[in-house]
Every structure is written in structure tokens, then in C-alpha cells.
Image 1 (cartoon, helix red, strand yellow):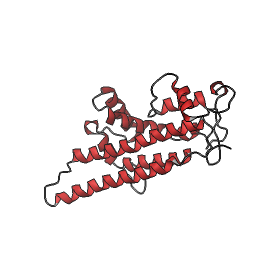
Image 2: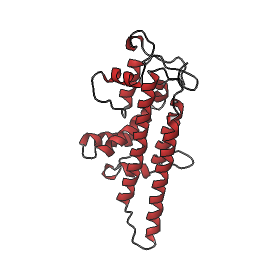
Image 3: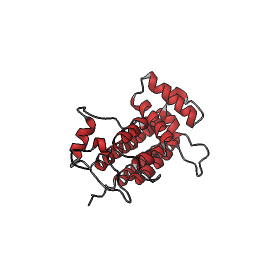
Image 4: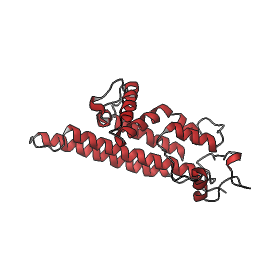
Length: 223
């Protein structure tokens, strides 16, 4: 009998709640400081706080999809389904890998690490190692594909924060905000986007809250 996939989504939910509370505290302190005219929370600093909160959540998301992927190669079961390893990728004489370490070694194939922020590369990895799932709302590839464009947008935000000096990161971020938020933000600052409200969503949500809610929802579908 297969082992049950751990509830990694619960850890993400906890981290998400903490990150949002930290941002809310920063906003409160900034407003409180206006009464004395001595606030330390300038717009630049509060935007940096939003960026740190986003990185905290997105890095947790990356860890979850990595952990779920390797365990699925070992036969861990989900709430109502199981992944099937591609026949060409199975260990000799087995349907699944005997340990998580063995699965990771097979996927790395002599490399040191893999990146998990790029949605296109993640989906390509699924296609290499996991058989397509017959039920549309089951399977890691189907879950990720359901929000592929938005996840790729989040990866552009992450890339811009982590590589702020790269022209390529700025160019891709500006193109993404033009597509999803219909504007380019001053100085191409991700924090400005994350504090901004998503158009057409009721009740109003900032992009940070929207990204957090999206990632938490997807993590719940993955386990």
C-alpha cells in the first residue's frame, strides 16, 4: 500500500499567513508614523517588504512542487489518485523508486540541482517522468497547467526581485506586467506591483494577496 503524500500545503498556508501579517504590520507602522512625521517606512522600504514577503512564499512553493514530484516517483499517493512513472524512467524491475534519494539521483543524472521556478521547465520535467493523467483535475501537470500563465507571471516577479541588476529580468518583468496588469511600474519595481490592486477582483486584493491565494490553492490541489 502506498504512503500518503504529506500535507505540504499546510506549511505553505502557515507561511502565507505570516508573510501577509508582516506586510500588514509594515503598512500599519507606516500610517502610524504619518501622525508624527517621523515614519521610517518610506515607500521604497515598504515595497521592499512586499518583495521579501513574496520571495518567502514563492520559495516555499518551489520547495513543495519539488518535494511532491520526487515523492510521486516513489509511489506516494494523493487524496484520490496516484502518478504513474514513465516506463522508460522506471528503475529496473520496479514501478517506482525505492527511496526519495534514489529518485532525486535519477532525475539529477549527475547534476547538482534543478530549478523549480520556471513553469515551462517544470511541465517539461513532468512530461519526461510522469505519464499523462486521464482525469483533467488530477495529476501534477494538470494542476500546474491550470494556472500556467499566472505561475509564469509569478516566476517573472521572482526573477526580477532575485536578479534586480539584470536587464533581461527587467525586460521580462515589464512585459509580464504589461500583459497582466496593463502597465509598466515606475523603475520596474516588483514591490510597486505587489502593493497594487488586481483589476476586476472583488473584494479588492493586492497582487501579493492574489499571488499568495493562488499558490495556496494550487498546493492544496497537489496533495
